[in-house]
Image (cartoon, rainbow, N blue to C red):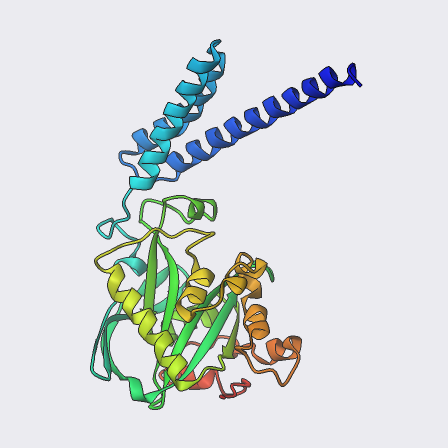
Length: 336
């Protein structure tokens, strides 16, 4: 037993060193990526820091004295942490055209005033004529909330957003997205860092859904959320409040904590149990999550409901003035 004790301590020390080295490598890679995907200008500074940080951190391993080595690593890591935590989101960047104009919303009595509702006319996925309009919505006429899921890369990943319907036939679609700058191409990895601001797009369905069904030819599904009138109104007001807040208090988008799915769950007041569900990360399964929560019609199994909820558009179709009615003609949109 006494002979084995030194062996056990040796194994433990080796394991601790290995874990420590792995942690240092992880911080080095994460810090380099944080600088690389940051919004720092000029570009040379951003690229330089993305290489300098991991080199400086790993160079500390050459320091022989443990106290000095650990102090140097801690100091460099603290510099990264302080910069990252104080790096502010902004609204005054050179945005890509579809994100250049923020919508705003105010509520007076029972009427919601929404400005700069996007209504682009798309000819191709990258060629569009910009257009915006303002509209007033009477909260007493709010009649439905639809969950929209759009798939472009398999069944696991989808863009998810809501569309609020009113008894006069109008719909206000609100999509939670990344706000991209002109100088950056879209990157999935960048969403894990301070690269995109959080952006609430308030749009006409001919824009937000139409570009996906008729231009990009994605698979788009619409599900009617089973909500009481009071719950529908609370959800809309929560969205409008955040829409207005972002005009003066911008936030960072984050793929894990502040994305299109987590924000919907937060706005709807979902319990922590559902916010931690694995389907929050794989957004393509958001509709099945909503089904399990009880937010979708339960008369059919989810697989059947999903099949029936697919929007089917004729070849060559383009969004018309009656687009919202056309895409719902054959959908199982039951209300509670």
